[in-house]
Structure formats: C-alpha cells, structure tokens
Length: 486
Image (tube, rainbow, N blue to C red; front, side, top):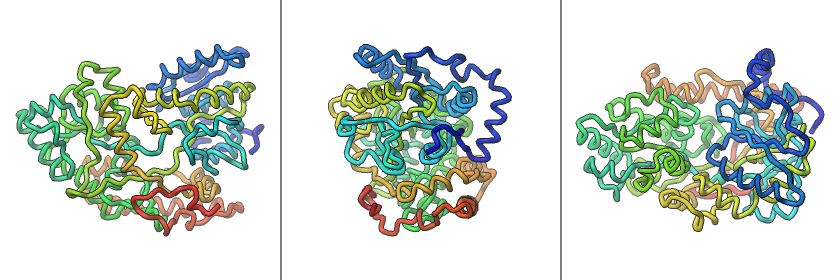
C-alpha cells in the first residue's frame, strides 16, 4: 500500500474526476466546505435509515474518556461517489466513510492508498465467525474494515398489504409462491378493482436496483451464478442460461399482459414504494428495509405489511439465492490524522450486540443475525430474516481466492448496453428476443473481461480466467473460507 500516493482510478473514473475538478468550486456543497476542527471526527455515510442510530453511538463516543465529537454527514447513494472524489481532490476527505459510488473493489482502493488500517483488538472476537476475509477486509496481514451488514439477504421478496389484497378478493394468509400463482393473483387484483389496481410494480427507472433483484429471481429459478451473471462452476458469463431467461421472460410477460403498473419503466425505488403503499398495485418486490421505510413514511399502514419469499417457477421448488462475502462498510481515510480515534470508534461501538440490534431496528440486516430475534423490529422483517438464514448461501469469490482479480475488475470498462440497460430495453420493446439479448450481453462482458485480463497480465499481474471458476461449488451450501485452500 502506498499511503502517501494519490489513488489511481480506472480510465473512466479519471476522466470523470478531471471534469469534477474543473467544477469543484461550484459543487462545493457536495463536500464539507472547510476541514473540520481538530479533535472532531468526520463521518460520511449513505445509510440514511441509520442516522438516528449513528447519532446515538456518536453521543456515547463523545462521552467516553478517550472519545471526541463526531460530525455526521449523510450523503445520498447517488451522489456519494462524486462527493468522495471532490473531497479527495480538494484535500477534505472525511475521517471515516463508506465506499458507495466509487465503483472499484476495496482491494484496488487499498492498493491505491485510499485507506489506513484499523486496530480492532479484542473487538474482533465480537464479530460473527468468518467475518474477516483476506482480500476483502484484510490485506497484507492488516485489517482495514469489517462487515456490519449480513450477506444473508435478498432484495426480491414479495411485499403486500393484508388489508389491500383482502379487498381485492385475495387471501392475505396465502400469498402467491409460484409464477402461475403470482400471475393469477395479479390478474385477479386488476379485475376486482376494475383496472384501477395493477398486480405488480417494478422500478426499472432505477436499473441498478432492479437488476440485482432480477438476478436473485433467476437464482431462485435455478441460475447457478452470481448477480453479475457469472456461473460459479465455469466462471463464464451466463446471462443467457435457461434459468435467467425464464425469470426475465416471466416478468416481461406481466408487462405484456398489462399486469405491471405502466409507470414502472421510469419509476425509482422510493417513488415506486410510496405508490405501492398507496394502493397502486397489489404486490411489490423490495429489500428488508421496506418495513422501516413504511414505519417512517406511512406509519398508519405499517401493521398491514406482510411478506412472502421470492417466487419460484414451480410449486415445491426450494428458494436458493447466493451472495458473496459482504465487504467492509466503513473505512478510515489514509488522509485522516485521527486514525487512532477512528479505530476506537469503530472497534468499540460498531461491533457490539447493541449496535447490531440497532441496525435491525432500522430494517437493515446486521452481520450478527442472532440479535434479530430479540430486537425491536417489524414482525414481517423478523420473518424475512428467518428465511434468509435458510435461503441465502455464501457464494465463492474470485477476489478472495486471488486478490489480483480486483485489478481486472478495476480495468474493466462498462459495456453498452450493460445489464440494467439490457433489461430496460427488453421491457420497453427496444429489444425483443430475450435469449438473444442476454447472449449478446454475456458475449460483450466476456470479451471485456478477456481484454482486462490481458491488459493487467501484460503488466505482470498473475491472474487468469481460472480464478473465476469453482468446479467444486455445490448448490444449497455455503462456500466458506476453508474452501479456498489458503
């Protein structure tokens, strides 16, 4: 790690940063205008649902004998990356921040000098077993971050209002579980309402959010790969596989049959959620944070919120989804002169059962799932987390196997149209053949990865396509750290 050097972003990020530098003065509102006073930690987060939890923890830290004040800045997800780039260029980096919007693997950022290590000490024993992974949280024997959020979660369960679906003649105690049941329920909802209520609403206007949901639905349909379309066993891009095509064609058919809310193609997540909550559709796919959002925004309907697992093609099919090891959530800037205090804050206050219970209360999913049972949470959230324990499995990670893979990921350029754009095109009708469009996506992604591998290999990096292939992977099981043979 070259802690004193400037970060070497990818070509795309460098060009973007050059443009940002020219307008940094005009955009000063995206970052602190003046460095914080000495003796005050600056903490940037995009986790809006955790603001009250952070304030509580920071107040406790300030009262501690070795503590100090903490200045909290909430930055929306869509602008966090830009704000961090501006802060770097202007020498105003916060002491602690998330990685949202930087679009580079943590390993690449560590190598490029973004962070300094933290000292967890005995606090590491409070983290769930297996939390710290080489190549993701530990680099060259030093710990830089740790996960406070669990990898055991998916974002496409079926949410509904018990009172609303009952008025439409549907049984709130028997939600749809299969594709056929879901289609029938959507059609009944529309017919019973005289066309005023649609069956389902997507958020294709927020493609980067909808895309992982559809990948999870594909996994539940039998896709044996990750959210980036890579088959675990072969390491090849397989967006065009039967399971992926099945999932996309089913959802697309809801749009074709006019069972999907017509504004779905342009709606963002928050807008769509509020429309669903207001009764525009019977069903809605969203992550575990939904109950918390409803309790804050529309508390009068919170007691009517219900949830069902991801839908599957056929009755009796098990729900299986896969996510790789969760990355670190908070990182100490290499530019911080208060690294020791930042370490104390993270180690002493972000690893406790009370903190994890606070995460659960915000409707995020804590790394320590055991706290959920006793935490103050919505009953539907508690039920969903119980399913996560049974239905979400740890996926293999090429970066964990070979940290040099991060250099390939940093080198890769976005393909056009990419995965979210391809999905959008299939729903708008600009693309008509699902398998053909997804095969073209697989081919373009494969070609770009091949190019990136060659580019970094020419510089002496030891990496190959074999790093993405895990022929010993088995469905319905965790691929734990012991499987890497390190």
